[in-house]
Amino acid sequence: MQNPNLQNVDELEVVPGFEHHYLQGQVWQAASEDELREGLEKAFDYRGDVTLHLKDGSTLEGYIFDRRVGPTLADSCIRLFPKNDPTKISVPYSEISGLAFTGRDTAAGKSWEAWLKKYWEKKLAGESNIEIQPESLD
Image 1 (cartoon, one colour):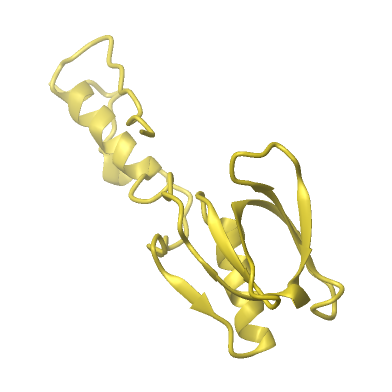
Image 2: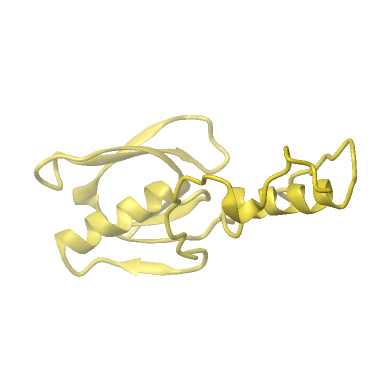
């Protein structure tokens, strides 16, 4: 007889997630204001470093942790931690010409559903003291 406390993984109530786009290594060239805003939104959700290509020809690499969206590009900015520097800086959207997803995306391929499935497989197999360790970020 099956334990009534164990549920089928497919029957568990799960909050729908969002589709994760694999962006690592891609370059985003913005031909319009809307394309720039779309690329920066994707960069904000990206869990790795990005390289900003600035209109003055320079680049800036770092992790985007915040953004302020205003009615114009000059009123909008991203905030980031530059790579290997704990200083927070702001960059107006109006200074950005494009970006590249250069850092490793630490969230790519990871999902709650995959973790839960492994847990229940072990639980249904009769294992106890189940401990699923996260993958190393190195």
